[in-house]
Image (cartoon, rainbow, N blue to C red; front, side, top):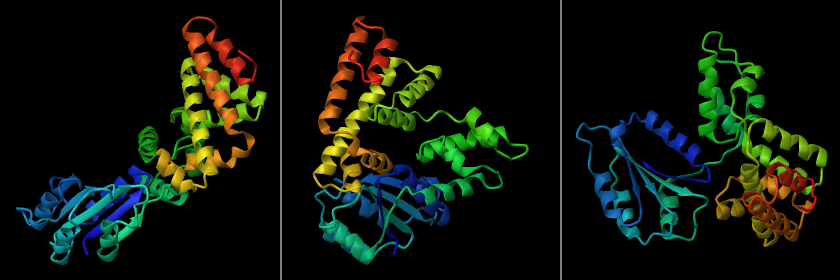
Length: 304
């Protein structure tokens, strides 16, 4: 049956999965069509029923939230008489609502797969991508985020640089890979909460040495403290890691990191930090305090 449902929170990996299907079934670019399910069911069925002028395979990507008001019976009629040259792939962010008629229909006839951003998946992706190049995958991953677009861009850069000997060293990675701001801002936030001043100042100086402006760092810290507050509140309400990631629209790994250390702080602590950052940002912009001094005072938990 040429019917699939891919769901998960990593759109890049879902797109990679679809690309592999396109390659597997030799589908030409002009035979890959994308629709939103809302208000387009009849058009989708009509498109799926028609053969390509050249008799080639066709792939239709259908984005769904499982909240659309559609005639599921019409879709089932097509499925029972489907065009063998057409592949339908339903795509949903996060976990679908299993109570919906559409989900039950896809479960009955289709191939359902949750697309997860696991370490094994990413490592296998890198192995396949670099082919005959040599690289310390673990060291490389310590320098980048788990976003496949970012990983691919950095690998392209390294592979082009080492085109001759195909041996990518750790020094090459240090020299060429773009600094992973998101990971280090989490570390900086974590050290502030734990009042580890030595580590805090070390991380802060690394940001400054890489020419990041204090105002930019304050913005990143504000976003991170806000995320920690949201995660803690939802976790205390009994939500699972995946529930929280779906609700907040963030990667499950960020939620996992936040939950690992959530006993170090209270919701009140986080509100206090967010408020102080807001006051600091305002005072710097008004010229009431030097931006470097103000940020350093905040980071070592001193009154501003």
